[in-house]
Length: 473
Ligand code: ADP
Image 1 (cartoon, protein in one colour):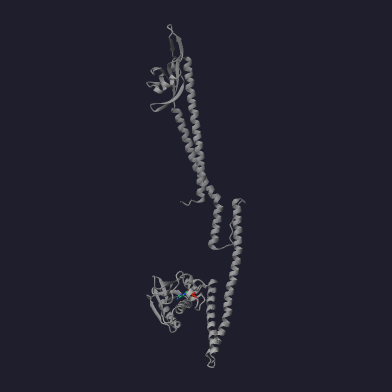
Image 2 (cartoon, rainbow, N blue to C red):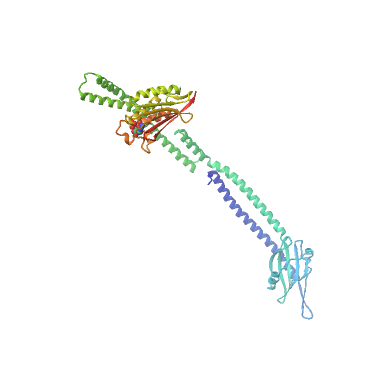
């Protein structure tokens, strides 16, 4: 179905109704005019016939045979009125001169009908024209002796009716056209405030500026009330949104401040425990174990806080600063750090990049991203399995950085969920973690106008691919 605009629908409805009304009106005019004109013709020919009949003289012959004397019928004829008298068998006895060599048509049916001694009208065709004929039986003592036919051409009436039809239809069509055009503009005027309302609503949606209101100064009719209701609604939305925004800001600030505040004592605890652990006289095994526990937990808390801080910054709309770095300079640094983070684990490094490409990046955040992926790969796979880190151009124009392991892989359906904050897979629960690492990794990738994806590898294990757009040097 076509999606018609309200304006077009209104105009079409309005024009349709007008069309129907005008068509009915035109039909009524044409029908009434036709009836009046035909009745006029009938009245004319019947009065002529009456005059003729009055002038017919019936004489008693000496042999008791009656004799009919017809008047000179030419006296009654007018240019468009023809007269003809036929006998009971249909043979013409007399006819007006204006018929020339023509005869008024006479059918068997007419003769039969006249036999019933009743006058009647009929419309017959003579050549190309229609003629209205009034047939009057002429009888003496109930015996039909002839028929008087008075005919009048309908050419004038038909011409007049044609003209009326033409005027009514062209006038009607012109009226519908003008009314449609007017309706089109009227509908625009009537719908103008509605359009303004939807434009304002759209600009609020797109610009997010809830302080905007629909500007309407018209009367307080249906539209005025609708504008009021909408403006009130926008007002309430604005208040609610501002309240939400305030509490969201408060919460964000709290997370950020709390992370900051907690970091300092934690660093102190970590520093002190690590210092104590290195002391040669910390002999008691239990004291050492307790210290190691404290140091471990402090490390975990530090990482959690770092992650919370990074996400709080992301929420606050923090935009990282990026610089164009040639990829051949980027790889050695990433590889160096990765080797360090891998500790004793087998790390398979590969880089296949055409020279001369650059990437807009923030080196610190990029190495944090690689660290998160590598840390997960090492954490979720067995110590005797290797981890692969690779960099290549795939697809063309994109730098693909992959971290693959031979761990448990990603549970089906979890591929995108694992990037949500605090989401941890079933198999991850027993292991240390907060569920924030991949959320940060995704934010870093997106800050680079790139993306990150997780998949399972054939033969087991998972593979994480980060794609960043390349720039030509
Ligand atoms: P965390 O590792 O602290 O739980 P992440 O956000 O880094 O949080 O990871 C979210 C989840 O994704 C993990 O809990 C785990 O279920 C899954 N995951 C991440 N990396 C891997 C991996 N290399 N192999 C299997 N599962 C992984």
